[in-house]
Image 1 (cartoon, rainbow, N blue to C red):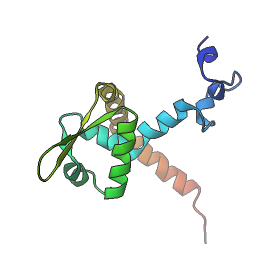
Image 2 (cartoon, rainbow, N blue to C red; image 1 turned 180 degrees about the horizontal axis):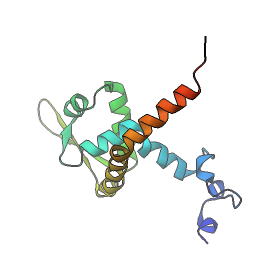
Image 3 (cartoon, helix red, strand yellow; image 1 turned 45 degrees about the horizontal axis):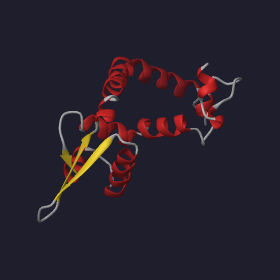
Length: 137
């Protein structure tokens, strides 16, 4: 039944993972947005409080100002982050999660917990893979 309610560009009765191969499907677009490493970090940081642009930049190691701007703009566009500009001199801008953005917290926290729980196994698998696929001189 659910496949019949999806937009035509997302339907493919033969492929249960159609969202993974169709760029014009909204599901894929949304997953691309929220699964982005910078988006996940911004969402996690905004979990507890409102933050200013500079505060977010200092907390996210390795993100450029441009990438932070793009990430925040996209999250705002998708209704996950709210940007508030205060009429002060100099202007003060704060970012916070919207109620929709807050619904992602459990999911992102579960993903982080899973990663922490399995990081040693993944490191071992990577080592085994590299050893098995190493080229000999």
